[in-house]
Image 1 (cartoon, rainbow, N blue to C red):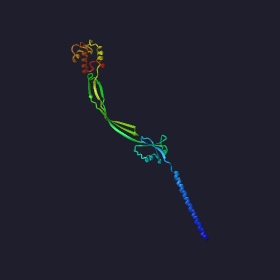
Image 2: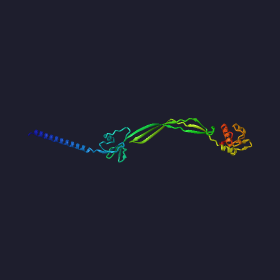
Image 3: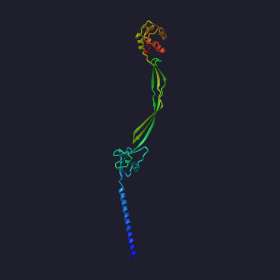
Image 4: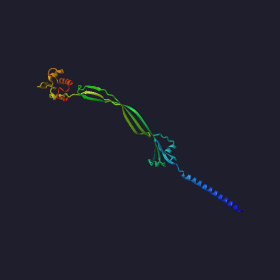
Length: 260
């Protein structure tokens, strides 16, 4: 065999050996890749899912976040609903720790708001004022009252069927106006008589004043009295004194009138 022939055989053998090595090497890489995939495939995470007020149910999931669990289980959310993640009974606040772990509780709090407005009629009050310009006990209405109208608006936040927050706002549509009544003050005629005459209907003052209220004759007759004031009964004298008071107020008794 010539040198050229030997060289060709050697080259062919080297090519076969190299090709075989490449095939074996590719097979090893493929096997390693398959083994790597098997190692990286993890078991599903088991968490508890609680939606609204229903009981928590265990579910298996391959989701890494709470929202993914909800999507996998067909849980629809409103824009007010809240998602909470609890771990060992404590709310997970940190974003870095929200990756799901076995035993976590994914909780959906159903939140909605309700509001209503009602109209309330507010009864008016009555103000009574004592005045000396009216006969004792006489009443006079000087202003009629008017009921008020108030609007009450209530807004409530409801979570899982329970009211957790409530806001009440009130405003007047019309304010009430009180009724004003004047009442003639009840006068203390006994105190006036005690001051003027010591309570003696027969009292006589040498200066010309007579009876319980020390009438002079001109004043006595101006109010319808007849005869001498101290000869009339105590009731008659009081009646004439009341007429005098309705005409002139307390002025006929400058000292004792303050006791009426």
